[in-house]
Length: 615
Image (cartoon, rainbow, N blue to C red):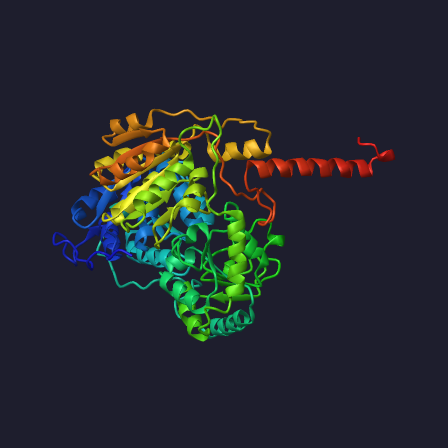
């Protein structure tokens, strides 16, 4: 986590007892919450706030994004690096609705976010006034809470409550919609008004007696296990529980797997670390889940991309589920022991209760190691006569060659094939080094989120890894990154000229009908140079490592357009509706499965047709 700013110091130009506008009060309320960076765009109904912010520009840094969606994702990236609340700003109407996607993204991934929007004056509410949109009504399903503020007197309390809600319990987004007249109203603010949150009782760090009973039951269950498995998710990272996770694993000898959002919670090369499960997880990891007798899930919500066909998931296991959100326990997967609590607190509580016996599960770990050796987690990609000279895997191998041994980097991935290759093939060693859009799967996430991450921690180089499709959705933020003078942002486009993940499904399951997936684009290196970036094009494996190394050393933003094999696919993969052990290993395996299914289908039809004839 990054250290926060100094405690609130009100500007000398505004005496404590002086009247202020609602907009000034809003600025001071944000500063009191230790906000130091805002991402947004001004507009008519939020203009009073921007007018007031000029007085506080030494304490509030505003980043003028090119699209409100980019501002929301940038605030997410900032929050994911710092562990604090990210803040984004928009005006009413389209400004507010452009924030809906990042708000939904933060909701799905549990990212603490406060979105502030301007609204038409109170007298015009409900009249379909110019740029009026019921943004509180729109965002009810995707926020922890939201507010419509019509009086400046409510601003101190509302802001305090919003930040409290966003970062307590399971983190998430909160929306504050403030009418223009509330921003213009003048009064002396009261900062001592208590929060008024009846019914909001988030789980605190310390385990209560009910949780302790469940923890003791979980310990007893783990002590009886012969083939236990520990599944770590994003909740471990959010709780700053990676060291506690490692201590627990090393004390017990229980092997560890991490979800997509949990990558970095356990070092990639740790002897107990197996890899990532799920739709594009490794075969040996999914097979281990299907063989284990206790699955200890801490901080993961059992997303469908992890479980596959739920009824066939972990069929032999007793499920122990630790989550700070009680609603997640038992929601998707039948849970035998549920512990509501903070991941780090639960790990620190449970570890001393477990005996030191790292060798107890040697036979189980050897069984998994045999599966790993059989199924080769780092896939070997053969090259045919017409294979392009640059494969996606070459890009990630080159990245590892440059990044390994360094600790000054983070990667933000967009959504698609490149996202899964990055998850599979980059050597993740540290917490908060991997940032991606998981639950919502938002294309266009990477570039603005990388900007937010780079502002949060200027000591790290932040790589935004994108597909050519997702990059083009928010490429406008290249201008913002240049305007902000950010030298530590590098963009790598894995460019295959397709909406790659959709094309892969069309190839494997829809008879290669590539309906609206071939994708054109500009010369990305030239586009980067037009924005004042250094732009490079790479189309051969021999040049990939040097391009990455040069980009790293370049004192300024760099974009590398990696023009890769167009029809490379991400394997292994679990087809939709299948159990996680029913994986497609590669194209040849898929072809065999397809032939076998066709033969079986014909046999079934023959058996049910009159006189044994096929229809």
